[in-house]
Length: 383
Image (tube, rainbow, N blue to C red; front, side, top):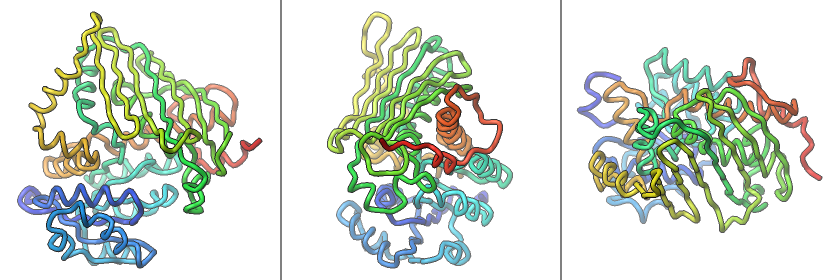
């Protein structure tokens, strides 16, 4: 990125006009002083117009914001003509690798929705390619951008909260069969994966971020009990981290769709941390050894550091935090909070979990060899 980056807007293109891309558009519109949405790409020619119509009521000065947007069927044509500074990739997971590689080779920074890819080696290849070319990868690991999370990470990393003992993460993100029937790729091993790869991968990423550690082993089990899909609707397992801590995971899409929750617990020497999101409502608790809740203290620190406006925007749409962070990382030539390496580690965690299921034993991480999620088609889950 040239030295004039801070003096001009960065051009952003979005590849894939599905549901999540609406969050991208709302975030970009909130940063109109720094970002310009220049292109939308989708192989359905009607998708860009449908997407923009769905966001109209939530975007100020909608006509001005959308005036310069060009629509494309082929993302390679877009890259050549628009030459975007940033490309957001919001297509089905199985397409992430090829599109992300092309964008990086072209010279664009990327914002890549989770999971990074469906193969551990291709994930590593992407973050190493970005590093060689001096480009940024920001991952759609939205939990890292929740209010006060970065402060908890800093305090854990500095030792202020003492040694970490263990952690537990629950992702009960229910979807019914209609959700999986809406698109043929959903719930397939090739393009989506199950509850672990799709719904739980960024929760695992958050646990590593908060516990300030990387996984060195995993033992997991999966099942498909209720959902009409190829992959698992339920996964449970335990990770061993390189600081000696343990982390257990429960991930499922087999619960009721109107009762979705993600909850996180970390037991450290000087704090018991609880973060949860239930039916869209967040809650935080940071208890010290005497039982005092320090959550409000952290919230005050967060507002002092980032400002109330930023807090409100991130609370409404965590993608605002991702774009703000990515923009600043490009300008300052620093690493995004959820960078390409975090994307690779999260994918390796999931694929190591799946390999453990295949081998029916504990698996060491990072995986020493390539593992593709399609190998899971060997497992017969339905009963």
